[in-house]
Length: 157
Image (tube, rainbow, N blue to C red; front, top):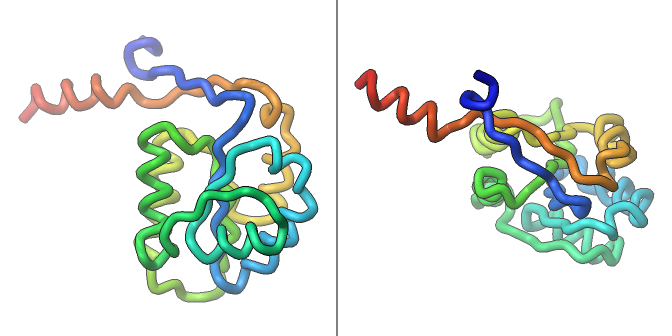
């Protein structure tokens, strides 16, 4: 039954890591990137517009930038999770400030959960993820067999 309900996906040794930070947390994620430069430099990095630009400028890490979060960057990251092109997300969010693009942020968090993608939304969790033994090895995880779910749903409509 497990084999029919879920499919296995394998994250490679080199991870595709998305880096995102709300405006009040950009200095924190830059500092975190500097402290974890050696680890991060062995992986493929991407991020939302301003965050990616600032990380590249302040740390020298190569990072692919997408749009700014409020201009669709969170959704671009989410679409890459769906495509299997992002393995983990580091998102330094500000829980005390209202965000104009909060629905986009919630959609990103939801899609990461749906696809069983590790996501850190604060520094402590990011530290645990980045120092995990899985950062240097392949890792197989299981996600819902969406094709099967769609087929089953179509039969009931």
